[in-house]
Image 1 (cartoon, rainbow, N blue to C red):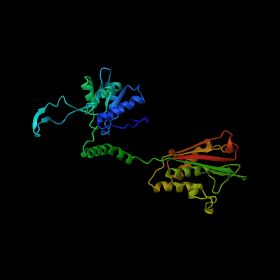
Image 2 (cartoon, rainbow, N blue to C red):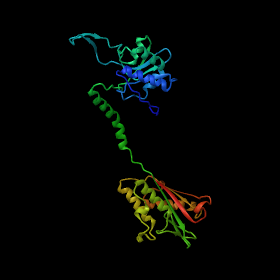
Image 3 (tube, rainbow, N blue to C red):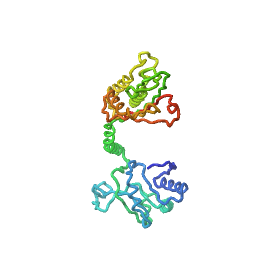
Image 4 (cartoon, rainbow, N blue to C red):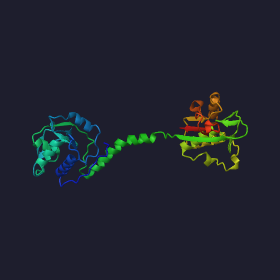
Length: 329
């Protein structure tokens, strides 16, 4: 039951006094509230549907509605020597639980009327003593009341049995991860071709880069590294290291895939978007997808290559370079 409108109120020496203190505080906080549900904190496992069923039952003919359970054990009265005096018919008997739902103004007035009579063990007793009608709904075995030390162990067993399937399901769930990658390279003042998404593409200008300048594969590498939380391409292949000068970026992506397999993981999908004015990606799309599939050893059906422009805006719009962004899952 969510919400942040919570207030802590000092209780009294008895349950009845504590409830009355809470009712007085509730009247000051919001005197327009029609109903109040009074619940024992010793019953921590409140089924979410119980209050809905209680609200569906209450009307102006009733003082309130309480949850009740049929009794499974036999009942008897005993004498002063703890000897059984007589058996009782358990058929009409019910064990009353909380929360107990009442019209707020009525139950507040009843607590005020019976303030000096501390014989009541629940709020239903006040309503019955005043001649009001109280209805019942089926309670729940989940509403175990923590009264004796052994009750906590029983509650713990119930919680373990209830949550174990959920915990097991969570433990058996696949660890699904998603990584994002982004890369940019500037055009050089020398003639191409360029490498883009693993293939050689005709271009009037080459890419200015330490390696082969393949923005598509670089973005894919960072997406894969991101899904693994395993650094980035600059961490694994620093541009300050001369051995990567003019290196084939396919080596970088193959390395990233090796890192995936070393963790017994599987790449489910690679999605690459290339942002540029030139070259035109559409005629090259299938060739790029096939090359990426070959590098990664993935089915081509798991490879997406898309293209867009920046509508003549920014460095890509001015034709100064190419950008790429990628997602790996």
